[in-house]
Image (cartoon, rainbow, N blue to C red; front, side):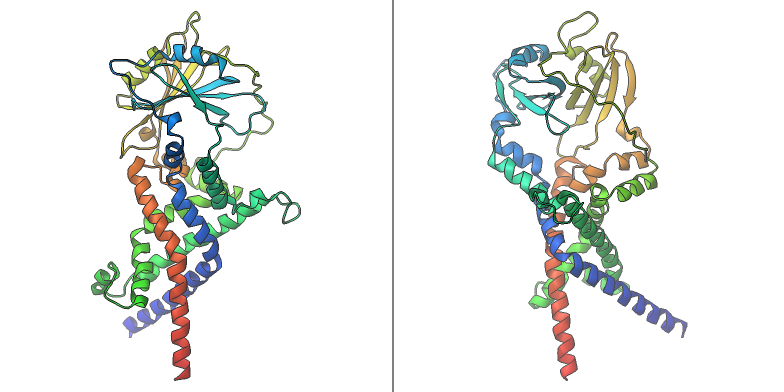
Length: 406
């Protein structure tokens, strides 16, 4: 009797969860189809952009020639770089160009303009403002993914609310519903008896199209469930301030925003902060200290020295197919090369590592190309779920109507 009560209770709970799963899917399905498809393309955003402008990112290595000192390249590029140099990107791959980031007053965005140089000749290869159809296309893909292209509409759709914010609210809400659908879907999938587990883990391609569609929806979603959950739970981070704060507070990494902080004024001229001045070493000396402490092959991101600076900050990230996306950071004393701060990512508490990897967890840039491939496949699966789920729902409606007629 007790067993029968438990069975009936589970049936009622399962039906309740199934109803939630159905309705969150139907309500958010169309938006999710767009968001997931564009997300699939955007997994390889960096690779697509670099492929479309390979002349900026790739160089040939001259036989028997070593890379020029960074200071020499900056001096040669001084005539083309506009604004203050704010950073450098140096890659372990010998075929990669040197990237110089500069920003002048009036530049939009946080990052300014990136200038590309041949590290062996110092030749200027071009900058990130070059017109490129593929880059424009990927920009529209991102806009569709984040704001459903509503940011392209100038006139507000809802008075008092920016179209970009409206689009963000829509995609964020759909993503929350998607996460709820993933969680309920996992519970619904769990068979009542262990002998049915193997059946639920494979697709019966010998069955009719309805059975194949059902298996594609359930089985593929199960295999991708962990990644789908990570994508879903991190997505609203950029849509809702309350969600972002709640996530940060749950991880114990929330910090109050400091209002009224004075903006840094940029001079509208080119500067070369690493010129040979008293007490400043060649950049290679600082990189040597970094390599001594972080003994692995990797790419460097350097915050350039500004007038009056007493320290230099250098981040290093491992390179390779299965390399973590997170960087380690070292702050060095400018005049002595002494280590003032060492920030190794893996040494941080787990919650801080998660909090610092929200973007990486959302786009798949967690463990290099390996995780990107997993996310690409999972995004394809996520794109198919609204379609296969809707077909399952339609087939159930037809089946119910046939029963009523009988």
